[in-house]
Amino acid sequence: MVKTKERPVSPENLKHAKEIDRILAAAYPEAKCSLDYQNPLQLLVATILSAQCTDVRVNKVTPELFKKYPDARALAGAKTGELEKMIQSTGFYHNKAKAIQAASKDIVEKHGGKVPGSMEELTSLRGVGRKTANVVLGNAFGVPGVVVDTHVSRVSQRLGLTKQTDPVKIEAELMRLFPRERWTQIGHEMIIHGRTRCKAPKPICAGCPLLTVCPYPKKTTG
Image (cartoon, rainbow, N blue to C red):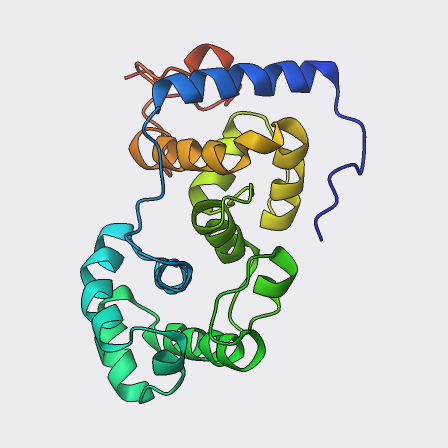
């Protein structure tokens, strides 16, 4: 479990976070999960596939995947080679197939074929970490959680919200800075901001809505 009260948060940091929260909400009012899914299992699988792969690519793969393997039992019993072939274009398909099948087997054996709805239960599934669990909780179950992917890590560091590099520690700090009811949505907004403007290795700072509150020392001028 992530601890959210390791040290006091200064009024200045809370004020800074509140202003960032306001600006992001105004800039990206339609922000949402960009993975296509119809149920918690589909979202869990799609999130596993999205590691080091674009959501656009994942959304091209999953329709046929879910048609062939419509539930956890089908995924758990799939021939590994056939599963790998279907997800190959998402990259790292050996590891992803292994994670999908291990998690699916746990879902069948421990949860009656239904994806559980708590952080503890989700992260106890083989192949499922906190990021995947938070995606599923926030979007499929309505349980607030801060998703920390590469975009959220980069954006939160550049904005001065954290100096941490470990995703779990970043998650803990963001949980302390933003209201619980905003945890899921602030992640969506940071992800869009990271994809479209605050890019790696070079951000597009001209016209950025956060320009005046961003302390990043390597802002671009052109």
